[in-house]
Image (cartoon, rainbow, N blue to C red):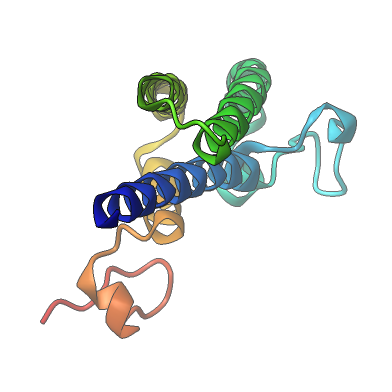
Length: 172
């Protein structure tokens, strides 16, 4: 009986981790790149409608190169996000079912992981494409923002030792 509870706790833990990863990916995409089709218009600050690129101070020429790829990325990532969320709901239904089918659960987990891998590939491809257009300074600023948002700043972040966002954390 205890093994059944341990298995259930592991499955629930995996489900929560998968859910967290999916939400994190969606928020990262939404936070950095999402100004979905309904918002695509000139802003008060000029023709660059994406806040991320405005923050990076991209030029109009850079924007002409970045915008088409960004639009395709947004569409692909939104579609993939919805697919992952649908599979996650199916996974939860499998775990909640009266008759537990471990093979079906494992298969659904693999489908979710495959979707997450595809999302990671989309993000990597987008970042590499951006890197080819941005200046070195813009790249540094972009990756610093990503590090801060994703919690990749290391132990100093945990201690609250970070100074201004443009500076690196103090090392012990």
